[in-house]
Image (cartoon, rainbow, N blue to C red):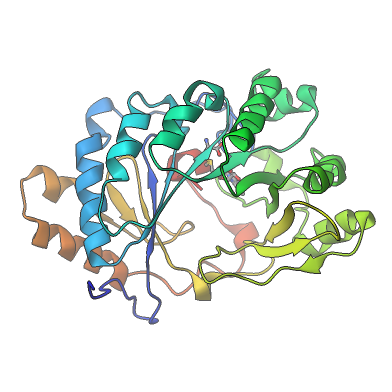
Length: 329
Ligand code: SAM
């Protein structure tokens, strides 16, 4: 078996790579891709699929065994399904998952399944179509919901529904969203709003996990679910007799950095070591200069050596220049 080489200075084994294949998105979610003028990456600055595959292959040879594809919106990039298919041929890669806003799921679900993707994360912040439009900027709730139902029929499991909780916007939708877990095997994941990017919406009081838990407990006791070693930062629960689960992710109120096993590859070819830090290594330039795999491995090792132990203590005062849509979540 290949020796795991991606161990950071704090002895964390980094086996999970999140790849953003595009910074473009068809939606303009208020917390992620605010409606401000923002320059998109130039076509030539975006990694080509074959470049991403080479970097992924190198990562896997060093110990990555889980890859999540994200964006922007990954399904807006032409050729995404073929890329997923090629990605799944990488030997040693055990798990490929996809994060999507769900708008194009209906169109691509069979190809996504055929490519070997089993796990989907879909953003769904409300079940109210009008509010959905207010949050995302587009009247596509029905399309997204039908996509989610189709994914369920096709056997994707688990299907995680990501709810970013925004005080004063969807705090009154949380119970209805949590209720879905009784009828469907979905994992509903309530995520604290991270103060990323410049958006006026971040000025208010964020609703934090203890408060969110209090709200959904109205539906019944939350029974803890045993954490799996491959779990992400969500703390998992279940209502009695429910088919699905409820998860809480608390990047603001409770850092989970000490268990972080992640690296990120941005659409413009940087290995990013932490969602909330700009410490990164450029891997595109050496790749395009024609350097060998061993040289590109050194770029991975350099990034890993610089991974911070944790993101800043006081997230609410963070002045992030980036928007989440550029990083991929
Ligand atoms: N377009 C895809 C989507 O909508 O899921 C993938 C990209 S999006 C950046 C990935 C995830 O980032 C979303 O599911 C959302 O939960 C999370 N996200 C975006 N902005 C966030 C914020 N300000 N705070 C917390 N989570 C955020």
